[in-house]
Amino acid sequence: MQLATTARRVAAPMYRAPGGTTWETKSWDFMLDKLAQNIKASRDNTFVAQDANGNIVNRTEGVAFAGGAAFSSEEGYFAAKVMRTLGVVYIEQQARV
Image (cartoon, rainbow, N blue to C red; front, side, top):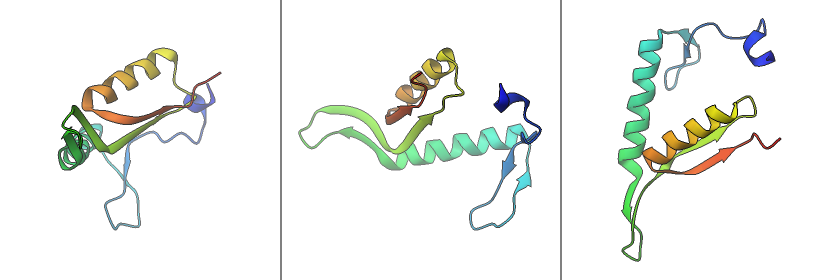
């Protein structure tokens, strides 16, 4: 609950450009587009269709995901499914309680 109600919670998306030193407030449309572009570029650059033995693996090794303990079970399940759909194999969920 503290994550959602703290007075220190950032109210809008913040963006720091590569090489930048300051954070800028951006719109959700900008941030979601930027996030999608970065994920797509990383996936395309690191996609592995076959392993060294010729087995079809269809995975990306340039994207990892770490879920937090603030996730509900449903959020964790959904996030893991989305990451697997993208071909991400480095997935960690912290919610073990």
